[in-house]
Length: 336
Ligand SMILES: O=P(O)(O)OC[C@H]1O[C@](O)(COP(=O)(O)O)[C@@H](O)[C@@H]1O
Ligand SMILES: [Mg+2]
Ligand SMILES: [Mg+2]
Image (tube, rainbow, N blue to C red; front, side):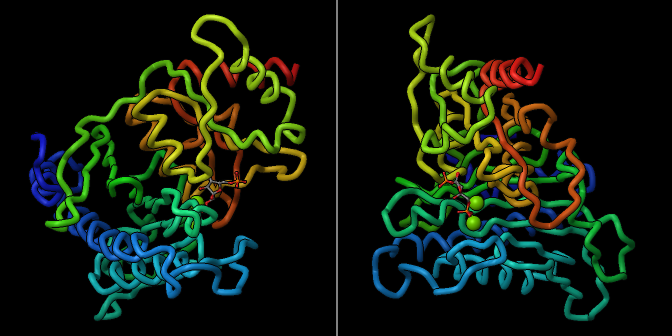
């Protein structure tokens, strides 16, 4: 049951009954993410001050120039989850391998694994443009009492028990789902409390915003080029408006509120696209679908893809249902 301005803590407790395996552990897990996000929010708001700006001068496991805030956010989430003894393993976009968390009794008794993109939209940190954090939660499939294994992290997205993101923008919001719809909570910085501001978020069936890095246009597959041309044609409610922030969380958050499509296709420069299946595409796909939208790699439902590698990348198209279906139509036509 939800009420406007209900606090996130109240909402979690009042809705934990909805959850199939409710034992309070998932609630504690989401509460820990809420806490870690507040600590990261505090640093993000200082972006621009010397000590938190710029690169650490190292290339991360993604081959990207790792930012100080990437490292800070990664440490905060890993520490907060580890200290609260509620997860048996964590996989992060910033870490080569997954982290096993035995627990203080070294008994590997915890049920959940968490996968995180601790700081999404890193290229926007130093230019004061909104960034985010993305999280995805699964029940482990290996036996309790044994160390977590890689297969616990390589589960298809449709087995997620919860997923969400935090957007650090004009305000800070935490948006998540446990498979019972999508709810958004805005942080009141004065009180340090998140309040339910966006109950039961829904993607408009159709929208008029398209989000894609058109700088890569010449490298895109023909189907994507044809769809972008379709978006720009003078017909019906087109041409659509082009909006691209370059932070996945912020682009999808805007499109969920206003209606629109986000695309990060494969290209001749990136044969499998750029975005990571485990840390970005699966959790955002769960949110998008729970809000009535659609998410695919252009052909296959993202959440049905069987992951094979901790850092695999996939083409990603998601948003308003009819717009994603139209894009898939162009992709299929160009293939024939
Ligand atoms: O600059 P590009 O190639 O358009 O890529 C932007 C995309 O890359 C990302 O920044 C990748 O995420 P990270 O910042 O977590 O590495 C997405 O947030 C964003 O949508
Ligand atoms: Mg990211
Ligand atoms: Mg990141």
